[in-house]
Length: 512
Image (cartoon, rainbow, N blue to C red; front, side):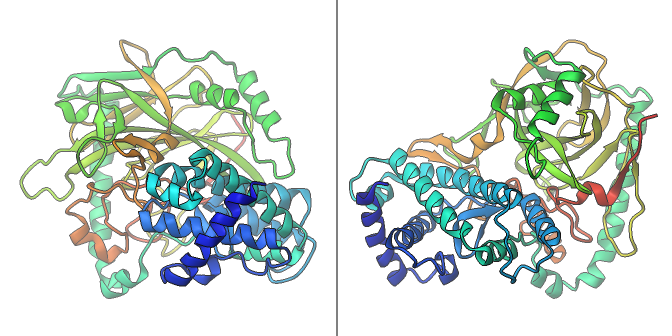
């Protein structure tokens, strides 16, 4: 390990601890004074965290775990951690032997989430902060390498202590994205009533749009069709084999190679049919210009992708996520509270263990307008009493497999979904798949900058609706959000990445 950098980091850590009142003491790696190298690495993370917070470049996608600065957790990881605790037969506070292969794999996943976030934060730090952290050292790459080495050292130390692994599991929680005090002050018990009526009205209008589209309604605007350029060829057997091979590990969570990821993403990349009434309906690539929000370059049609996972009983199901971006949602009138910079559509397909589509669902990047589109392989479950918004299903889809693509019809201006069908082919514009992670380090004049702020919101995309919708407890309702921060219900509590979202609302049935 590069001790010169560790010593430099440690000196800055002492200053950070002495002078930065915004850092909570639990973020130090507590209980790790067994060796100077271990404590020095823990202090090194403290110094880096102080620099990241001063520069305002904190990455909010996965949550940090108090006391374990080399780990972060998402909602799916929190569910897996809780399941491990149940299977071990111990409570989180007990010092049982949790260093089994499944727990080790789970810790590796949490460590990988932190490493990804650290790379983002270090990339987005100003040059002056990098020089200060390293006292004139070898730059960002060396700092990233140092963080990786320190993470490995702290993890090895923690794995020796079953009680610390249990403590990690107890702290590996993701709070929801609702602000309870807003609901209290806003008299949520009363104000949810008119909101529920508004949601019901939107459901009625959306169902009408889907019925009209199914009945052959012509688009009032020219229809721009975007399909994946040069898709990779695959068979159902290949996709099933990829998922099966990737799931051969203690936790049965698929671990795909880069080539396997692209094969899956190409297999089900949707066709987007956009009713195009103006430049605000052109999809494109995000980048920084001179404004406070990223801009859309419509000369480069891009669909951003990520792979996610969800739980279904003891199974892990793979989810493919596709996002398109528009420059704005234009105002329909001077008092349009839904208008603002940037807009988009997110389409997600949940695959069976064999790689066949079970269910599609969709939101806008604000977390709004959550819709579900099941195939006949799943059946919707009734909402429990008092569940609030549960599962709005405006249309169902036939069974299909590799080679049969979803066609998603998007309305002009509002970018509402108005139809989903299996594609019947036709003239298209080619789009390119780009990793969604690119948005965390977009180039700008100073180096790189995330599209998202430390709060997980995209600055400059606030909507007027936030002034009226705040009693529902969603921070800046209508603003564009980072993955992991999509609250999708005004009434009740629901998130797009809830690890039990699908299994609570749908039951998988045998194919007919």
